[in-house]
Length: 116
Image (cartoon, rainbow, N blue to C red):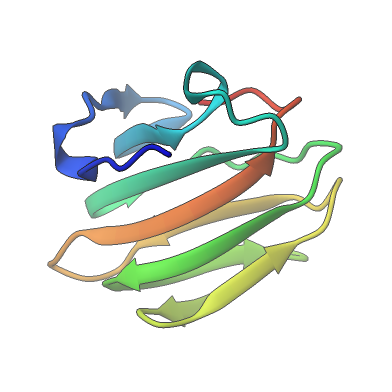
């Protein structure tokens, strides 16, 4: 069993196109012996965003805190703390922060996907 405090995991910083104001941390992944999934946490600063992208695998997202928008099917959909999101494979998507506070989300991907 592994127990971690996410704030002690060194983040990878993304602050240049195609992502801005973004920190990513691998909470549980290959290095921990996870064979099926990778759990990541992302913090998006005010006016920050993830890259707009799509990929073959599905992923699940839980919005831990803050609020923002999710790009889905050509539209920006509001999302906020407490919501869960399922993104099927090959669906273009992007998250952006629309508030003054950090937008924090937990994201699960299959183990064969890139961890960050």
